[in-house]
Length: 287
Image (cartoon, rainbow, N blue to C red):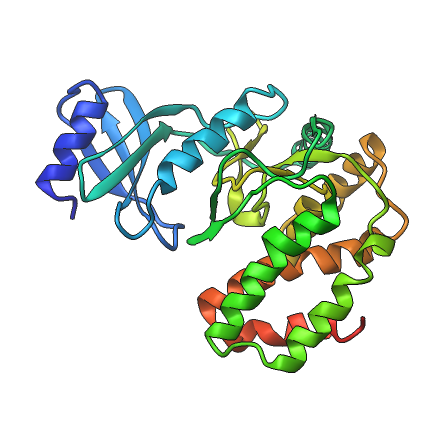
């Protein structure tokens, strides 16, 4: 049930359109999500506590706008955002979904390759954001391995140690891995990433176009996005074929993807517990 204060905020953000009808929508682990109808207009709305996740929706709004500015793949339009002291609200356009034919997957691979051709001189981003419900530091670095170690792996390893989810032997294995990263990642430019590209964070619209949602953007190594697509499955082989055609993958891409997936696996370890530890250990013990 949406409180009266939050409903008032939403009505204000939507220029006092009335009446509004709220229909709960599933699929989010940390937000309350609703389909809002106002006459013939339809919106997607996220609601969360401001104190629990400061600036969560502000950073998501900026991420969506940054992706949309590239004009290479469809991004939901940000309609409005705001807060009332206790809650924060993000309102987006409603995306009607369609089927996922072969043309969709080919287009998706091609468009993601185009996104990954958008470059920056440094890895990172001017602002921090979130990966799921955990803060994500984007302090810029001049090379990928420094950024990957200092801004991605080390903070999550430290958090896992503090939560008694990793042992000293695991930390030692990570340290050995760090020493080999320069040899495993040939120099590539920093490119614009979605940042959390698993199968739950894209849609197929009614015109069979890919739509990216719930980003955690920064400029990084493209293997981070590509690796994430494999973590929980759900991506067709045509997606990878077309991506590779438009932006050929490195020879050791599978090894890079395994290493890149340590970051989301550590995130899941810290959020959901030791059921993710075996996959992490399987990778780090090899180095």
